[in-house]
Every structure is written in structure tokens, then in C-alpha cells.
Image (cartoon, rainbow, N blue to C red; front, side, top):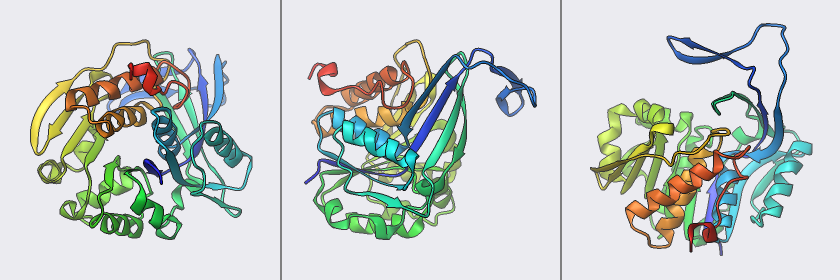
Length: 306
């Protein structure tokens, strides 16, 4: 029996950091621009496994929970990178699906001197997860499920939410863009979703502006993160407080959201109050953004004095 099962994407992240990346302000925001046909020097280059399912699985395992990851990869050398990292971290890989006909997802992360980044993503096998791939019996027996991006697979989502209706399994949900669209169009009815912790960033929260009040009324914990500005926390439909992040030197931002969720939910599973849950999330995120990659800086329970 597992303490936590994570569901979502598995990728290989190729991180390239350079002080020569050119940033330019525009009406749509800050742009990372380079001369077509030009070349720049890369000062730091690393390859790690990524994707929300594996990031959070490793995070929960480091927090001391028996954890499994549900994700899909290709039968290729990139997929082997993911397998090897999960094995090293002692995450149960029994529910990782390997498909010979698919390519493992890959993201190339271009990181500027301030830690901000632009991503080039090939979703590959990470977008192919289906309801038939779910370990339904294990999902009944686990203590907690963390659900992230499943490429808007409506059948999978509906079956999972229906599966949870008669169980005592807790659920945290960090929906991807396709899931947010389903919510905004009310193709997924919020009142039918069995969710305990709902986490999105400020831009994602705006996508579901028409049902924000319904989400707050229905889901016990709603957290809206806002990067370096912190975030807002809602409890049982009422605004609770705004939090500020720990001030640290940011190496890169990849994995900040996943690590915050791991810290928050881990504290929740250990019976901590709301303020301490947020503090654990902040500390975990602050540690991750000081390292290259989404997993390297993930904290262990002992790092939090437990």
C-alpha cells in the first residue's frame, strides 16, 4: 500500500543557462529573443528527469512517504533517464507505462541570468496517458493522490473523480491548461470533483474566473501562487491570507510549483495547521529554485526539523 500516488507527466528536462540570452519587454510581457542564425555561449548545461508526476513523486518520497508515480514514457534512452532517477530516489515505478511506439517527452529550458526561463516542449508519450493505464486498485488503497496535467483526457478525469466519490482517499490537483479549459467551459462540473487541495498560478486562476467562487466554495483548500510575489490561500470558501516567498537567489524557476505542493500536502498529511503547511511549501520551493532542475533541491523531512 502506498502513502501517495502521483499522476501526470514524465519528461526529460534539458536545462541551458546563459547570461547572453537577450530579454526584451513587449506588450505581451518579457520576451527571450535571439538573432536568427546567431550563436551564444551556454554557461551551465544539465539534463534531469522532470514532469509533474515524477517531480512530486520524488518530493513526497524524500518527505518519507511510500510513493508511486503514474506516467507514460517511450522505450528510448530518454525514458531510461526517467526510470533511473526514480529508481535512485526509491520511487515505485510499477505504474510507469512504457510504449515502444512513442517518444519520451522532452523540454529544452532556456534560462536567463535572473532565473526566468522559456521552454521548448515535445509532449510525446506524456500526453498519451489514458484511463486504461490507471492502477485502479492501488488508487483505492493509497492514502493520497496528487493529480497534475493529463492533457485534458476527459474520460480519465471523470473516471478518477467518480472513483474517489466513495473512498477516503485525499486528492490534490494542479490542473494543466487543457483541464482548466474543461473547467472554464464547465465540461467538468466542479461540484462533481472530489478534491481537497486545488493549486494553480495567477495566470491559470484567471482562466477559470467564471467559476472561481464555485471552486472556493466546493474545495477546502485553494491556493493561487504568484511566483516571486508569493500567493493567496483560501480555506472553505473564505479568503485567509496572502503569503510572501522566502527571499533567495534564484538559479532557475523550474519545479517551484511542484515543490510547493509537495511541501504543503506533506505537512497536511502530518496533521500540521494551514500556516505551517504553507511554510513547508515555501521552504521546499525556495530550496528547489536555488538548484538546477526540478528535483535536485527537494527537501527531506529532516531538513524541516522533523
